[in-house]
Image (cartoon, rainbow over all chains, first blue to last red; front, top):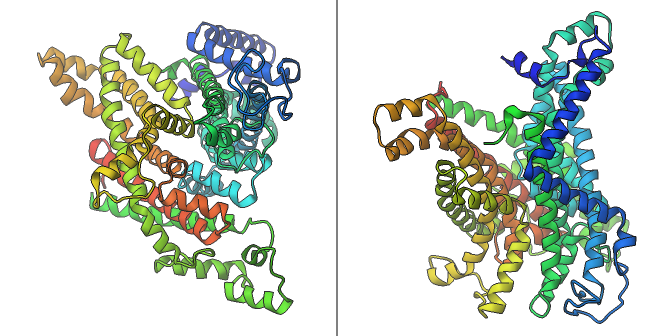
Length: 305
Length: 316
């Protein structure tokens, strides 16, 4: 049963004896996944939201009407035609800060996911590939990490290491690494029981080659889905840390920092605390929708009802 | 059941030892010398004074000796002394425990009362307006940062209703009315994310169960819809929902750290966060380890409930 399941999800490219045909199969499969993704209304919405933030982040200096750190106007100005979303407690343009804030959000989200994926992915691959005692040891460590509520561990780690955007990325990445270890280990164990792995071993392929050429491509789907979902968790975690003063430091325009400092003025100027929250919610919503859609598109058997 | 319970109890011992090691190692990641942290920048100490202080704190010992001293204390209920208030960390935690427990229990209850019926209704009336509403609640609930929701609650109550709860914490046993006024907004905020997750899980689990053969058999036997739903579908659909509750407890405890800070409630989260701000590391170390132990124990209890609900799990 397990073989059959993996067989359905796997590109046949992995068979060592057949080198040309598989590429076509793989390409067709990619097309099929893209097609499913585009037809998924919620996934399409999520993808559009994420893409929009990506464009905002990349083109921030061109799009933003003001500098994110300069103070061009009076403080706490209500939204107007000059300052569409108003100004903050230092007279900085909130819209410009939100546009530049998308850079920090995407950067922290992206780098944290890469750290988590790198550490957790290697642990999961090693555990699933070598099995036995190595697997037992790694998975015990992973279980211990799961004994902590994630947010508390991130807050404590970032607090201990000293508040900065770098420690925030490190803390989020390290704390969520065990998640990837679990996500990677399961499918690796299944793939390792396939005949093509045995075949590769027989023809003398090294462990590194087997992992890179045969294991990784076949466990990519759950990794991609998990990475997208973790991206949204990381964006939220960065905002939380910055809100508490333990992440991005002023005057850098992190949405969490903006909310944290704007909160004190919300009775006089509610917009200071409203817009950064809208930005965080939209970004997380977009990533969640995209992650759910990717899961449906990459693995139709897991499709949520 | 007795043997199963015993085996699970034995299995959490290595987890707890590992968790204690992790907390211990984490606290050693502190940049700089602990003596500098303790005395601040105003005082300058001679080399002998520094050495004396290090010996007093026990940080001149090798790490394993320091760990054994700490864990020995933990086993006898001693989590160290706060660097700032000079009070035992255990006392500080026990003083603040009721606040966090009340918040977590109320938030969990609210979320179950809202999410479980909503999930069941959404599943039985698939693609109806109720289902659409439930889906929207689920998606937005997951994306809303709890600290923003808390901020909005405060904004609405103070600006629109001109109402602010008493700033001084009042125990429910002292004055229930004042206490509920204080906890209503924090618990609603905390429950929002949990409502989303539980509702989504309940809905998809119910949909799956409703498509099973035994449901059709029950209907074919002539049982009424309500009977099938309650006695056949709901109990089975609830099993996966119970399993995600373990993760939810972690989210509740993590959420409590932020929510207690925003609403000024003196719970364990508030204690840990202020410990971080004031660099009071025994408090952070003790608080984080305490929450990890609580999390592991609660998850054990949830697993046992799961074993009770699902007859396929062997107790032996």
